[in-house]
Image (spheres, rainbow, N blue to C red):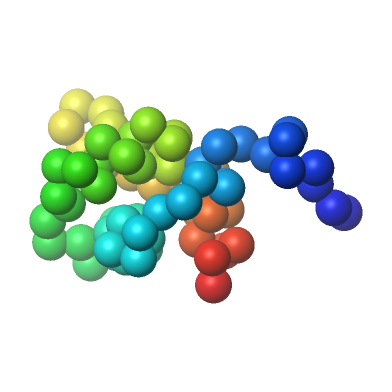
Amino acid sequence: MVRDIRSMPRGLIAPLSQAQLNSLRELAEGTLSALPDDHRIRLLDLNLIEEDSGLLAVTRLGHERLVSDR
């Protein structure tokens, strides 16, 4: 199945730095020691992570992004 890029969620196609992708990957793997504020803001804005009661988690979209960026 081929997706039309216009219908893809922003979080799947927005540019991320290698450092931001590494932060997302480390959060997903449970190895993240610290998340820079600028990474947190960008990843939240793209709905790649979510925050609940101060805890961060990778969203379904975030997991999709990690798979597509391998």
